[in-house]
Structure formats: structure tokens, C-alpha cells
Length: 308
Image 1 (tube, rainbow, N blue to C red):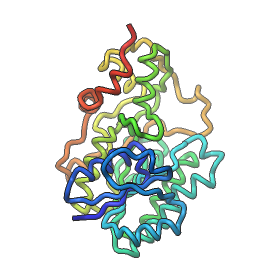
Image 2 (image 1 turned 45 degrees about the vertical axis):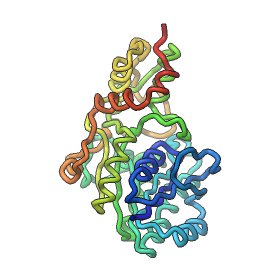
Image 3 (image 1 turned 90 degrees about the vertical axis):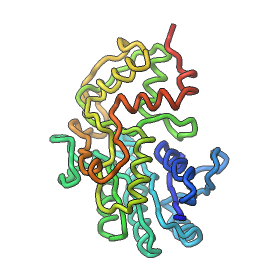
Image 4 (image 1 turned 180 degrees about the vertical axis):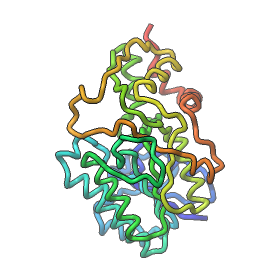
């Protein structure tokens, strides 16, 4: 039995990853998050952990003695990072470097998640070998986090992904899919950028891919993301049409018109040929992602019916 420590377990990916590993008797899971344990509502054991509290990180690693550490914790407020640089750096870079050092010290294995934002968006989707050129401060901290893991030299898998979405009632914040369905079900018009391209990634599918990668002890950098490459506007339109919402509520706009503090890579996304070659688990298309959600999220859609 392997002992798996998951950080950031109240985020969408952390929830899905913790639950998936916990269902497998071959793994003993400890889910951790920077919040109260009162929010935890399924069978995996849980504990409170702020990954920026280095003393707490060391103590927990020494007591639980994980074989695998899956780091889902991150500072993901892209625009706010431009103004709260110290926190973004502390969580996405400094804490990641320390975690990698401690993982190496106890002889464990680290899975760390990164993003297509480490690229400038001029030539996406990007392979594992593409040269990073992060634009905004959030993007830079994610790149620095990657670099720290690589420099420390612990056994590791850096999994790059993008546009993570899905449904979970415990998730600490909404994602693009949940937000969009909420707006459309309420009959509210939305404006969606049509010049940002990615391959959206269902959190459930990513958790499956990560679990297989962990069990195979894959190392290095590996892109794990959805199979369909499209604009955010096209993604929104497919969601609306698939679930029967009014797609005329969706208006395309360009990124520049939003005047966001942080720059966005326009031609982002990551190539997944390498993952498809080394993993048996399927990488879902957008249509497969939406079919999965329709089948497995009945209560969510019941709470967000199509307007009469």
C-alpha cells in the first residue's frame, strides 16, 4: 500500500484527486488543505496544512511518511497576483521549492501541477520541450515553481495543464464551467473571449491521468490536458448547446477589451501526444468531458435548469 499526501484538497483538482486515490485500497490517502476540517465531507482522512508554513510541512511529512506527495495547492488569482506578489511567490514558488527539498530528504516522489501560462501564447499549443516565456507575475511564479522542483532534483512529475473545469459541491471556488452554467441557467448574458485558445481539461479526467502516472512512477515534465483545442468562446458555445442553454446569451469579445491587469497568453494550450503514448487512460475530447458531466453531475444540473 502506498501512502499518498494531497495538498490543496479543497480545490477542484485536489478534491477529485483525493477521492480517486481514496477509492483504491492500494492507496492510503491523507488530504490536506489550508482551511477548517469541518468542510471535509468524504471518507479520506484529512488535516489542515498551509504549504507556506515550512515547519508544519516538515512535521506532517515526517509523521505521515508519504510515498507520494501530490501538490494541488496553488495561488491561482491571475490578476490579483500582479498586486499581491509576495503571496503569489510564497505559495507558487518558495513553498514548492521547500516541498521538493523535503520530499527529496524523505525519499518520496512529488507530483506538481503547472500551467500553459508559463508560455507567451504566440505559438501554442506547446510541447514539453517548448521554451517557457511567462508574461504576468502569476505565470512567472508558476514557472519559478517548476524550476525549483527541477533544481532540487527530487523524484518528480511536473504535470502541465490548462483551463481546469468540472463540478464539485465542496470546491472552494467556482471554475469557468460552473460559472457559465450558473449564468446561462439564470438567463443572464455573458461575454466570452474569442481570441484565447486552449485545450480545456476536465478535473476528473486529469485525476485519472495523474493516478496512472503516479502508479507508473513517471518522471519529468508531462502535459496532461484535454484533447480538443479551441477558443474559450467556442468552448462556451459547446457547453450551452450540449446542455440546452440559450447560446444567444453568449457574445464574443477580444481579450484586450477586458483591460485585465495581467496579460494572457492567446495561443496557449499544451500538446498531449507524449501522454497519449505513455498512458493507457484516455484523454477526453470536449464532447466526452461534457457527456461525463451530464452523467455524473445530475444534482448540479437539477439546480441549474434551462430557463423556461
